[in-house]
Image (cartoon, rainbow, N blue to C red):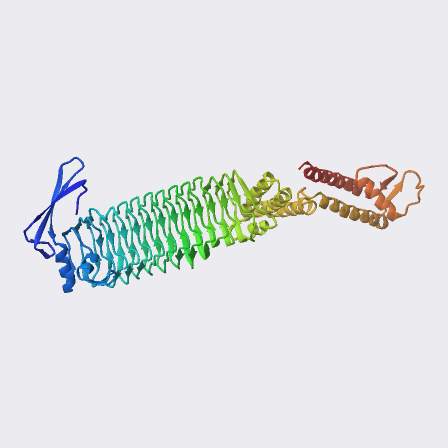
Length: 582
């Protein structure tokens, strides 16, 4: 209703004015608005009531209908002083409505300690030119509160201890000034609460210990400035809470110890500036909180000690700047950071979480999952598709890494294999060589299974040669030496193979025409058992003295034993050197 202006003039005329809604005022206020260029913008005529006129309406108990009215003074403390009442005595206002009114008071517009009954309390499309406004410790018992499309004062806006028992509350499209906006300790009823597209200016905004009701709460597309945004101790109940596309400005954003009940909490596509953002010790009973495609600035993002045991928390495709991100000692049902980009320290030392999704993330600095002061109760972590430029601090044993990946239900064996490969490379860089070997072993095992599954799925007939190939690799590469990561296991495997081959030499000598013959006339008179074990050792280790040689069918078996020994010696050499060089 009111144009944008840099200055205005007002003239009070003793002319009766009747509004379109039928209200009649004894005097008329003529407002002339001046633009930035100094030209007259427009002229608006409003009704006019003095403070004494308004006090008379209050004293008579009539409806306080001041729509389309120019008000230059309205102070309940003045009313109490005039009637010699205690400064906190409750004043009853009936059916308060100030739609499209213009407030221009040198002193604060003060409606504190009032009980407002009747219909919706409305300041819709009103304009506050200067001063401040207060509903401190007032109680609205009727149909809600409406400041939609209002242009609020540059001074303080005081709603502390306000209680709205029922009805909707709307600040939709409202524009605040630069002063403190304070809803501390306010209590809202069961209706919908709208701050949609609200411009909060650059002042501090406080919802400390505000009690929101069971209705939906929306700050969608709201804009905060450079001041602090404080929801410390705020309590949200059953309704959905939306901060979608909200611009939080560059001030500190504080949701410490805020309580969210069972509704969905939506921060999707919201933008946080360079101030710190804290959800420390906040709580969600049950539900979901989403930060999809949210943009965070250079400040710290802190979820330390957050209690979201039965809530899914999602940051998919969120953008993080250089600020630290901490989930230290927090508790989640699930935590999804899919496709996020981290340029600075990420603290993932959560106290409890069923599943953490780090798939497709880019991590340029430290990702800390190493338990220190407490054990981490994490079910699974998905590392698939991670581009790891920095480091992951994680312990194979303490973090139960094998279980973190093997127990994943949503990923296939190929994806699990690639996750172990990523961790294998990470363990190599961080000097955790035993963990590197274990991760590499799991990578090769799952890779073999994935190749088998993919080949059969693509061409079922390939099962005839893929299964034998798989079992060959399983026995020779895995069981024998854990893919050359365990030289001690290779030695044990060699001893087992040597024993089996020796027994087979002995059995072949007993039950076939073959024999192990001495080329020197058998000066030591060795029996068949000793000859079998001795010849197997000389052949298996490729020593080849020639004092005992195979005769008959056993020649072919000796050739195989020599080849197997050559392979095993090479296998041991590779595994041993791999260990020593690191």
